[in-house]
Length: 284
Length: 117
Image 1 (cartoon, chains in turn purple, yellow):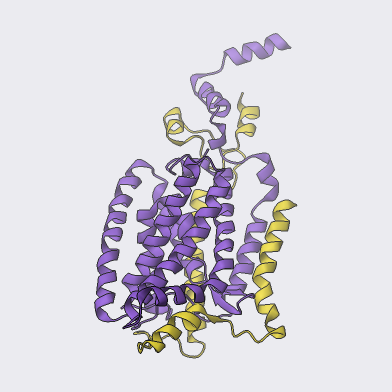
Image 2: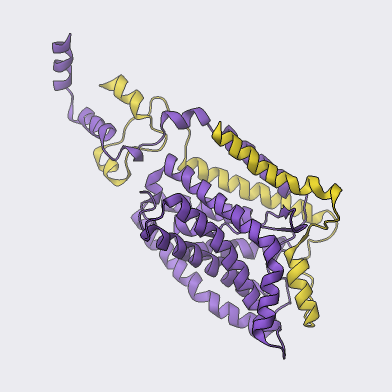
């Protein structure tokens, strides 16, 4: 019996040998699913999506984007000029990275849709009695890089400003800088630094998500304070606005940290090869 | 079990907001109203109406529904491309493709191993 098996193994064709090598590769974590995940299925994720959708739909567009006309035209133009290099760099990045990996464009599509949905999803914060939304730029920056996160955030913000009474066209540049650039770069930078410092990837993702959210609101405070402080001191205005955000954004930032860590955990378990380009060993 | 508990906890946190409105005088305004527009009005820069003003009656709910449906469809489409459902009889790709990114998503290696070898 054993001899028969041994003969069968010797007769394996090169193609089958390739299959065997693939399956027995030490890099087998890139293969797809494991049995443990098969049991979970997608039902819990669907349930989560349903709950999030139900929470999002009944509430009108209460958001954190700077509304139309709030910034003076000079400041609006300045923030447009500040946002432009980030967007251009991100677009050039898309072409280069799409040539390197065929799955990159679908990933950008998925992340873009997720950023759009997350950033127009108001979440009630019981401790503050107000609503706000996460940004999704922390996890986006980890998955597709900060440059492309700026691009997808710009598209999401433009659609929201045009059709959802959410933000504004005159304040689009400022909103791109706060959510698309500051949120993305802080998220990416924190994740990279935390991994290089030896933190577990899940802690690094949590920190990236949380701090990218807080960085977005800190930048919004800076933009508002710079434009609206008038004759008063800038720092006082900045501190006041920042403190006013705290009751809502403190818990929401923590929630975004969990969201970021959860999404990264999911991608690591299902398709870790998507994290090959993540800095500082995101897939490790 | 652990995963389900976490999801239920997250859902509970999300639902606790709307449910708790009956017990407190929360307005559930967005931080754009409670923070941004408040400071802007104090500084003499009230917000304008949007250029395309969909914030009229239930029109905003309608456009949010459309946006949610379109965004959800796009997200679902790309999700399925990147994370396709498992295939029982998936064939392992050629060695060249494997060198690029391993076996294809959804490929269950164990079944192929038992069946082919």
